[in-house]
Length: 311
Image 1 (cartoon, rainbow, N blue to C red):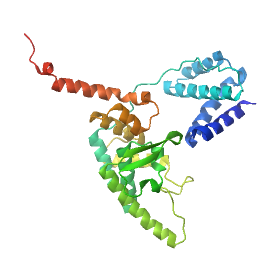
Image 2 (image 1 turned 90 degrees about the horizontal axis):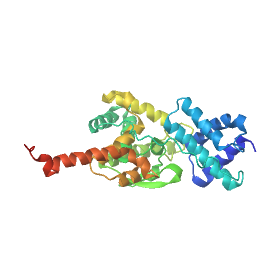
Image 3 (image 1 turned 135 degrees about the horizontal axis):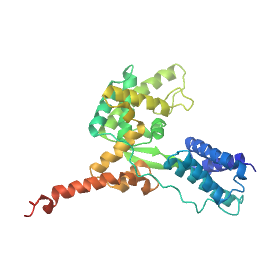
Image 4 (image 1 turned 135 degrees about the vertical axis):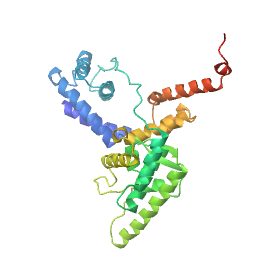
């Protein structure tokens, strides 16, 4: 069995057994094709040794690939070989003992509450007409209120938002579901946008047109707003809000959501649940926020911190 068959069979199994999303499948395919190209002159996946895989990772580092990228590729290799061992394609796992470069603890850029407030206000004014402004407001309020991944946001079905919910059911990575609370502004924006969608649906039915099941429908192949379109929108809103567009992405709002909650007393386990992180280690990039808050608590409240210096 050649390397291409190894990759396609593995990805099919990930989709069927683990619920891997389309984007995850594409990422696996890209990473494993790169590995296969390197191993092609060294026997391929079927006969690759631990030394060959380590050589690939060294080559990736020499190319200047980030530690996070190298860690992701090693993870794909390890999962492929676990699958190959279970399937009986190999009697050993050459990647089992290889240690990765580790995850960076660097916190991606975030935004202040004032900057987020300006973005939310800009969303209410951005668009060619009232429908665009209602949609943009709903997008931004939901994103900041829930900390959703952009892929989760744009693909939300309408049924998840019906009935003026106080909690929103989100289907995340691997098909895992989680509940996140909605803020009053987010609920209001959601009600206004759904009212417009209902009016539009009535007109479409009267004209014999199909009605979308998505909360943010579009003419894209998937039937809903694409991540690329929302990325463009958020840049436009940042420009209107007077916030540096380079500093604003959908993921930045997700980090702002987590950071602002921690700054105001939420604990790390709660943030893990709300963000949909499978591993608390992923959420621990925010621990510096907790450390700063604890330092401030000591400085502001500990009696010795307030005591005059001793002579």
